[in-house]
Length: 140
Image 1 (cartoon, rainbow, N blue to C red):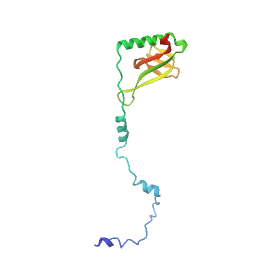
Image 2 (cartoon, rainbow, N blue to C red):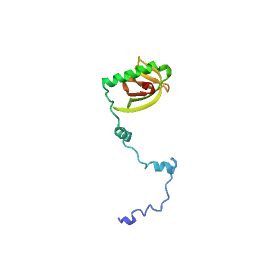
Image 3 (cartoon, helix red, strand yellow):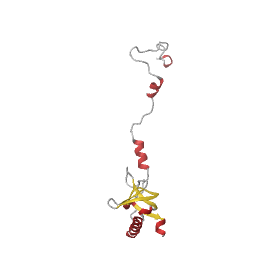
Image 4 (cartoon, rainbow, N blue to C red):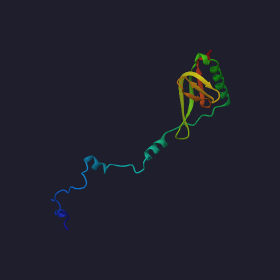
């Protein structure tokens, strides 16, 4: 058969319209050809793997002693609502490691039972995660 005249017998027929199914809108028809994600969540997993986290720094006993002394001084001045700057480790909830964060605020309470500092902003920082504390009360 000649490819040039392959559809001559149907080319002029009227377009079929179903009597039982309503015609699709242009949006519905185009959605049939839209790309889809064969592996749902794959791109999110790749991004999560690429995200960099830090390891928690193991501090020496000398630094731990200095931090303990600073916390004791803060405890003694808690009524004065000391303003402090604290650098501490925040564990990542999705993967191993985390990041270091520095926060400035006023100490509201030191919870010796749970071993954490509570700021007036209600931020809770575990003492074991702290690597640096600075405040003007240490300079007196």
